[in-house]
Each structure stands twice: as C-alpha cells, then as structure tokens.
Amino acid sequence: MNIFEALLAFLVFPGFVFMVIVGMLISWVDRKVTARVQFRVGPPLLQPLYDFLKLMGKETVMPRGASRLAFFGAPLIGLAGAVFVGTMVGVAMFLGKGFGGDVIVAVYMLVLPSLAVIMGGIASKNPLASVGASREMKLIVGYELPFMLALAVPVIQSGGRLQLAALLQYQAEHGSFATTLSGLVALVIAILCTQAKMAVVPFDQAEAETEVMGGALIEYSGPALAMYKLTKILMFYAVPMFVVTLLWGGFGDLSAVGIILGVLKYLVLVVLITLIRNTNPRVRIEHAVAFFWTWVSIPALAAVVLAAVGL
Image 1 (tube, helix red, strand yellow):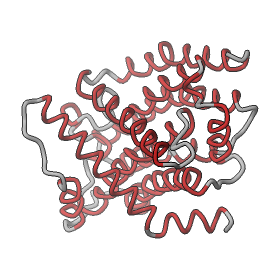
Image 2 (cartoon, helix red, strand yellow):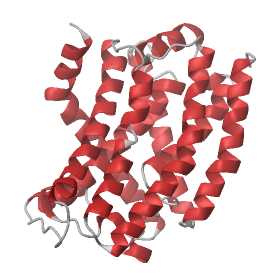
Image 3 (cartoon, rainbow, N blue to C red):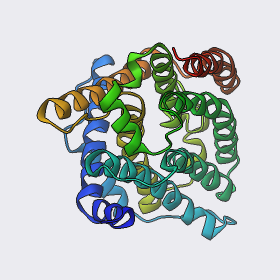
C-alpha cells in the first residue's frame, strides 16, 4: 500500500468518522468545563452533534453583493485543511507511512482554516466581517513565526528529518523531543500557538461575539456555517494531535501502554487549552501580535539555537 492508498483508506470512512467523534467529544469537554467555571450545568454529551445537524437543516442566506464562489468555497477550504492534517497524523501514527516533507505540507494545511475565515469574511462584504478578517490576518502574522520555529526544533534534533513517520521512529529510539531542554521550550511555544490557531480565548479576536458579533462569520448560516463549526471541531483533534506527534512521541510503539500514554498526552494538551481559555480574557489584537513577536518568538528562537548546539 502506497501513501496515497493509505491516506485514502484512512480518510474515506473510518479515519474521518474517528476525527469527527474525537473532535465533538473534546468540544463537549471544553464547553462542559467552561460551563462549570461559570457555575452552569453545561450541555449534554451529544450537544455538538445536535448543533451541527440543526445548522445543516437550516437555509444558507448569501448577503447581497457577496462573491458566491468565495462565500461558499471558503468553508470547504478550511474543512479540507483540517481533515488533511488529521489524516496525515493518523496515517503516520497508526500506519507508519508518509511522504517526503509531509511536516512542511502539514504546516501549510494548518493555515487553510485561518485563510478560510479571512476569505469568507471578505467575500461577505459586511463591515464587521471585514474587521474580523483583518484581525485574523494580523493574528496569523503574529503566531506563524514562533510556531514554525518550534516545529524546526525536532527537525534539527533528528538530523533534518521532515517526515512525520520518521520523526515518530526517531522518538521511539531516542525518546521524545519534549524530554530535552529545547524540545520542552518548543512544546510550550507550540501550545501557545495552538491556542491562536484554534481561535479560542484569549486569541479569538476574529470572531469576538461581544465586540464584532461573530466577526468574519457574521453573515454565515445553515450548512455553510456548519462547515465552519465542523472545521473548528476537527481542529480540536488535528492540532493537538499534530503537536503530540511531532514533539511528544505520539503513541509510541502502539502497545497498550503506548496508546494509553498517547491519549493522556493528548488530553493534557486539551486540558491546558481549556484552562487557558477559561482563565484569561480576550486580548486586543495588537497586544496579541506583540505577545507572539516578543514573549513567544524570542524563546522559540532560543529553542532553535539550543537544538542546533545539541541541548
């Protein structure tokens, strides 16, 4: 089985269903913890599924003057990026396969959901949506640099490996990158950037319901909005799992102990994301960009230097 057949086999049914189930479950956990922090009961277990199905049954209203192709194509582009990254991680972790440079491809694919938000916001021709799209552009400029620097650490430590499966194999033989000083710093940086990539508080400026009433997504409804919501659900699976795979050893040798440890690593990242979301207010977009360019980029650059000198 070549990589394309493996990707197809993972994506067609079992892999996609698995990603959706895990994403919806983690989305429910996030909402439940948030509700408890706010002294509310919170939603039932199947609430993310109910919300998705409800949106799928409603009508999508396209605003007057909007670009039809960009308006309806943007949600599908974002969804494709999240699905592709989740599929690449699953194929590398469970099948031990990949293609040369798939880490670089994954980094590009992870930008697609953000670009979809920008594209949809601009296409809708709504002033508030344009504000949200502008904020998303600035946020990308802020967090992409430290995120790529953090991902460069395992590549340097492994001697230039750019394949997810090869990086997993290296960690199985030498221990996870997070056990080294540079790898640990890179993991912390990646978690902070993950918070921004998933557009959750304190880095949800593009949607910011209390400020711009949904921002870039203000004109979306029905199935088109459902695709954006599904993308965000899949990002709850794809991004933390990508970080665990790249920097924290993934599921190891896929033994019972390795799988349990891998699930615990994933849950630790999700819990950290939820705790950060519920203990910090939304920051201004200029403060977010300044934070990533200084307090995040400088340690990320230091981690790259430490990895290069062998620490």
